[in-house]
Amino acid sequence: MLQNRQVALGALLMIVGVITMIPGILPNASQLSTLALIPGAASLVYGTWLVGTSGDGTAV
Image (cartoon, rainbow, N blue to C red; front, side, top):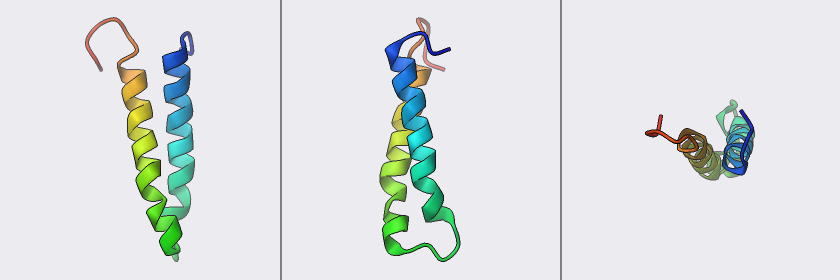
């Protein structure tokens, strides 16, 4: 699966995005943790896009 750089970067961004979002979804999250949901979601979406468009055919 991790055969090219685009897939590896996408997978890394998805992992970072999920880890970044975890403190914001916990109960009693601070405002800073809630604001961290924005870059976390952005990196998750961009990582998913990188992995989905890494193949030769149409995007998944």
